[in-house]
Image (cartoon, rainbow over all chains, first blue to last red; front, top):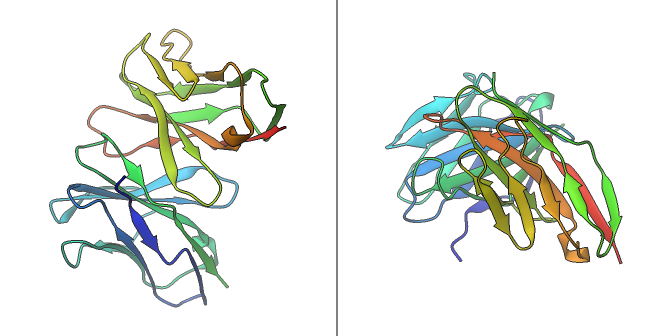
Length: 113
Length: 112
C-alpha cells in the first residue's frame, strides 16, 4: 500500500536554528498538508498546499514557517528560527482529492533545546 | 469556531470488553466526521468516516453513527482485542475547508 514517508523520525535542534522537515507524499496525490501535535495536546492543522501554492494556513503558520515542493516528489516544512514551543510531532499528509483519502506519514518528532 | 471534544483518556479495558469512546462536535454547516487511529510508532490512519446525518461508518468491527441531533459521533466496538491498543482521534471537516479539526485523542489500552 502506498505510504507517505517522513524523515527524519526524530530531530533535535538548538533554539534559533533552522530546521527542515521532509516528506515524500504518495506519487499521484495533488494535495499536501502539514499538521503538528504538541505533546499531550490536539493535532493541529498548519498548512495545505495545492498546485504549487499554499491554499490555506492556520494562525500557527506565521512568518517563521514555510513550505516548498522543491521537486516532483518532496514536500518540505521549514522553520526558520526554532523556538522551544516548536517542539512537537509534525505530521505530513497527502490526498488525491480535497479532504478525500488523506494519508498521513508516521511523523517527525522535533525537539528544540 | 469548529471544534471536537473527546472523552478523556486513558481508557483501559480487558480483552472482549465493549468499547465506547465519546466524541461531540461543534461546527457550522454540515461537517463530515472521521475517526483516525494511531498505532505505536505509526502515522494517523483513517478508521472510518460519515459524511451526513444518520450515516454509520464501520471498519474492523468499529462503528460510529453521525448524530446531528446530539452533535455526536461516538466510536463503539463490541469486543476489543489487544491489537486495538492505540490512540483514537475524532475529527471533522467542513465543506470548502482544506483541513481536519481534531479532538485531543484518547489512548486505549487493552489488557489480555
